[in-house]
Length: 281
Image 1 (tube, rainbow, N blue to C red):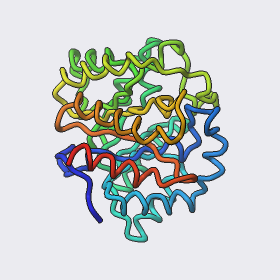
Image 2: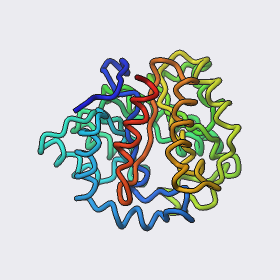
Image 3: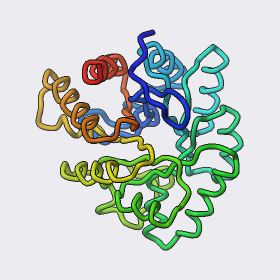
Image 4: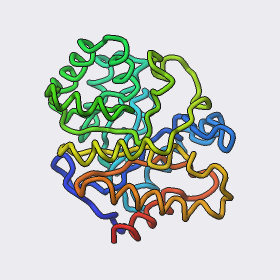
């Protein structure tokens, strides 16, 4: 295995790109190109297990999975079969956090972050006390605590008020612009078809990432695939490389990125890995 370039992230050498699991859970932001139903149909638990080994073989050493009961079982089987990927968990908000945390901790995660849409929803609806309580609950399990958000100003508020966050999971696009007060899709079941990401948002995100010294995971760096709109498939690789390059030039040297992969039609995991190697050397 030819490992991707790494940095010290939360005390361990972690590849500068890790793999997220939105496609594996059927969360599509390009419903007219690849519907979420197609993603869910492809990603059976056996296929997810196979993909985890592909990710590891392609040179990544960490993943960011959703802690659904099925995923937890698959991750345990992955480890039983010798899988070595580090795990940074996104809690599955359809199940109470206190119930999920002991199950996540069984897999010895590198970190657990407060799910982004839940953070934003609580901020928008006066739920600051619940948000702070959730953060402390995660911390009580002796694990590094992250804060996910789609709103760069939330990171600045967290730092100003010293919420005790170890790392940030910041979306490159403010998906809350027209969704204030709307809970997570894990709760509502609403698809992402209505979301349109605004290209200028990512520059606001870059400014906050550069200003705050704590480590960041930059995600949605391809706008959930929306960067490909208006282009032909043969143009996609050049667009991917352009967006990866821009991101790494605008985040700090100790920050990492997270990109999901949909393996049905081509080996996106390996393609992305090769692109990162070219950019980062």
